[in-house]
Image (cartoon, rainbow, N blue to C red; front, top):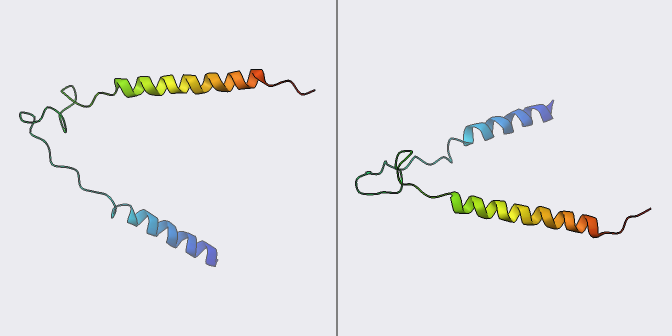
Amino acid sequence: MKKLYSLILITVFLMLSLGVIAQPPPPPADPSTSPTGNAPVGQASAPIGNGTLILFVLAAAYGGRKVYVLHSQPEVQ
């Protein structure tokens, strides 16, 4: 029974502490002075295309190496 109370207490503590560590949102940027930052969707913002391409290339290289190593090992009978 003591384990149950301590589990409930820890769960409640963790659920209540999540709001404490949150930061307030940044103030909205003036779109006329800053082309980046908190601009609405569809306007100037950070590009994600190059990072996505790098991620896919690295994932393909990693997968290719795994396949190469798998096929280059001798079969155990």
